Amino acid sequence: MATSRSNSVEIKCSDITSISYIKDSLVITEGQPSTPPATISQKGDKWTITMECGRKGNSSVAGQFENLSGGKNHTFSPVSSSEKPSNLNFYFEVQVSFKTPSGTKEVTLVMGQGHQTLSNNWWIGGNSVVCDHDQAMIIILKAPTGETDQVYSLIGVTNCFTLLPWVN
Image 1: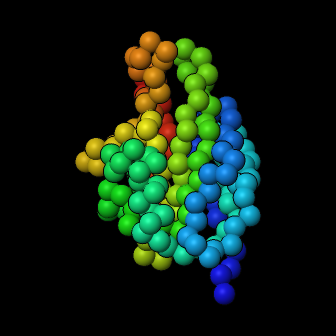
Image 2: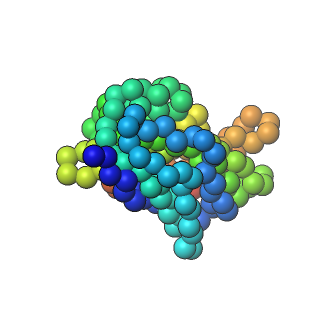
């Protein structure tokens, strides 16, 4: 019998002003229980996103995550040797607002949970996520002119992503 569990991921960044769950964005392995929406809390520069749902990996869910993110160069997990997930338990989208030199910018990120060795690892993806997989992961926010507004180095551990702003 499938069991619902509390699944949490953290995002740390001093420039984030809000994070909100995008309604009806949860994609989960068929037959697994879920209770969206995700709950989101903040303590200082740390945001915790929690989704109540089951955990069963599926390659179709992973493929949908990769496609929605924009391909393997737009996905990142700090504890995976792979460029893209082979199986994910589920994924969902969040809208993240950043304060940047030119004002507030919003970015849609895709958060997915997989399984790596002895723990459930998290993936982050989206069109604003750029990864060469040989170098540091970054997120680029574009100003209305199309120029780069802010760049964040993206590092992490199993269930926590830290975004560090580069100097403009």
